[in-house]
Length: 278
Length: 297
Ligand SMILES: Nc1ncnc2c1ncn2[C@@H]1O[C@H](COP(=O)(O)OP(=O)(O)O)[C@@H](O)[C@H]1O
Ligand SMILES: [Mg+2]
Image (tube, rainbow over all chains, first blue to last red; front, side, top):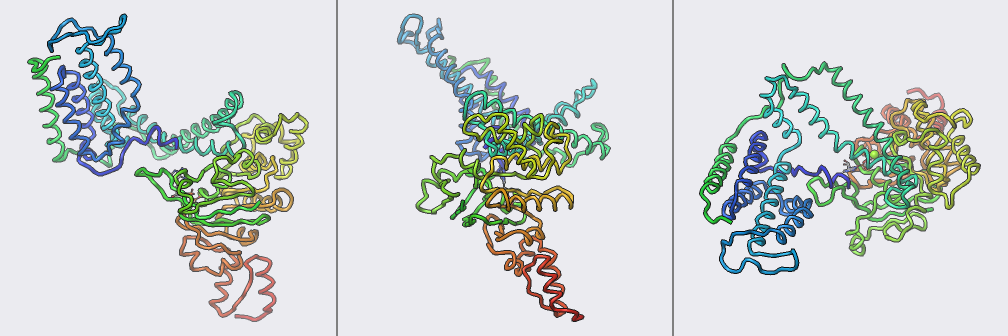
């Protein structure tokens, strides 16, 4: 129940996208975001959308999952659309015809406003879906491995990259455990009559305290035990550590790379030489 | 109160890649006054089943809609758990539930507050101090602790076995009619285990009419239970009194379960040509063996 909401992100199927190298996937996402921001016209954004659709299809993620990512920021999308629809007052008229379609006091809808807000909404959706594709297709562990590897140059300036990655992966690993624990304790207190999701504010606060204290205790205990277990195995972080799963590039990575490189190049060209500018 | 479950199924994370079928068409009846045992290899669904008994897990609504079709029903006494209108608070007051490792849910500053928590939660109107203390004293003494010496202690300063008793006291303080315990002896030393089982026996005699217990300790099951349900992969394989159940030695071992020491001895004697027919309690075993008198093997 609780798990559905927050960390049910990774979608476990085997696919082309799942098997890409996590380091590259992170870089691809960054490149993709750059492309989206470089896109100044529908043609360029359409190219981004096309690449995204192909990626989603290759990743074998069901459409519902993909749309759920947008649902999360639905409010933001609507807000952006409405604000831009009413207040985007352009001073250029590209598409010919009457610019102001409807006006009431300061609220004004222009054709340009419609187009611009559609553009923003599309851009926002592409951004969110693209980012969620990364978490849908990459396990948290692979993600931290990738981040650690990408940040490794920072070791030169004695930045504790390994420690940072370790903290991240432990935190990620503990989220489902603590959610399980929360559910277990909540059930136990409900069985003792705690009013966790009903009743007046005071009783609810009390019920929440009865869940939080045991949860906190168990988190501290687990952290303690984990620390001791690592110590007992002489864990000493960084330097001489070898990895069980080494990240390796496969034949898939160059293919994905060329697609994305082509996209960025295309969008960059259109940035400099607009085809159908808005 | 009787517990009647029919065609109960439960799937965790239904409709997701992580779906786990935890219960598969479970039908069980527990009569009032029984000491009912649930056994099964870890992951067989006993915990999932017992969490249905006080409505912590509900029959999924899709099942409700298709109720006619697969006929999933669960009634506990007069409560119909397939209905949305059931008063779950009243149900939980009547069905006490002790989870696995119940000491993990302690939170209050003193043992008194800890045990009083459930009592106050379930009270119709705010109970006064004396009334609460009286109920807490009774519950704490029922689990075999000395009320005067522990009531002002922090529950976190107690020993493992004592914490567990306090947790159990916190559940029985409302005088539930049915007491459900999920592996109440897990993680305790042999003495602690025996004490908990003795405690259950005492509670059954004087406190709760019906006891339902999930346990992996076959000796305790053989000694205490009136009937036992064996779970395997979400299904109920047998519901039998221990005296019958432990005759199915091979099936139990195949299901990854243990058998009580008495059953092992009966088996070993059988191999040497001595047939003993007992109900697998230590007492009965010894008397049957003695009754055969002096015959050497
Ligand atoms: N909260 C949960 N979320 C997902 N799966 C669960 C959850 N609780 C139990 N399960 C799964 O359901 C099955 C039955 O579990 P459970 O009822 O706890 O068995 P038992 O008590 O016999 O060990 C197991 O396969 C377990 O992994
Ligand atoms: Mg269990």
